[in-house]
Image 1 (cartoon, rainbow, N blue to C red):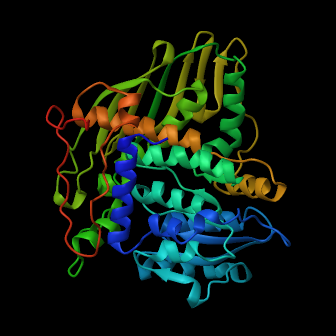
Image 2: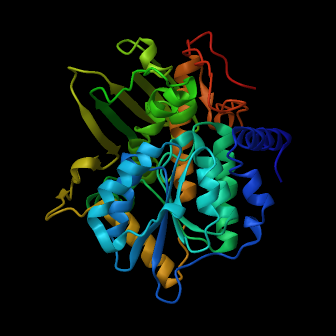
Length: 430
């Protein structure tokens, strides 16, 4: 049963989607998608992909999927912008017989997602839009009874994560297969390293460190003729309602490794962050650095750092400290009484994650990666909330938060930028 806040949040999200013209969740359920049987590759076992979100990551995900198994074809695309869709199909045209997307299966606009989801012969949906939309797209895709692959993270706030956690159960009840883009969970080096950690190679984990410190990323200054909404959607990385801030959109990978290694999620977090370099209006309302102290069960503390600044030392890594040794996870190295380092070549994890999902679909084996990635996403959200407010925030506070980052109404036109969070002044939502 949903509590009253869940119901209120779900209702407001559906109202937003209907108002925007997308009707992505409420309309999908109302038109009967929820009663459809699960759609699996059958007969020829052909995987027929419908891509939602035709930017660089969505285009890359399709390329990865096309190379992951035999009998895979792209048959439909959807994006809010025509140029994104056109660029995607132009790039993918090199794959020739694996691309079959006539004009009638190319959908553009705020309602594009629903139109693609309604296609009967799409049996493998790739969700690669900005993360703010992901919970509601996941909900609607599950209601449609389709197997899917969702990029990470899977939400940007507590209400979104609650929606995703419900979708975990709904997908399992329908026998759906769900993959999520935390590719390290399909990477030979990470798999072999963490298997040894779980087998006790470094003893009990007592501390950990996680980093994603890198240089600046792309930015698209507002162009003449763009409305506020178009600018924010095209510049989605810089708005918390769309990306969750870079601790959520990017650092989630490292935090996922820590959760995976410890078989747990944090119980609380304290931290700090801010905008020291990216201070102009072009950069929306996100921070450019975070430093978080997560506390895990048993008093285990994890030091988490992420930064997007030029001319600084870069570091993307995860380290574990145990009672019997150390593990530099990203280097596939264990230092203990029985030291170990991975020998041989690594695999291609962006391809492997689709290979594994398609194999499960064709083999009729249960497969659902949604819950652990939802928890890793909430781990990142928890850290953001602690930094934004300057307060200690608990896991339950983050999960049950009423903070709803999605604008109350979304349509082409004006949309004010939410103020940048100020620790000590920004408050936790009740």
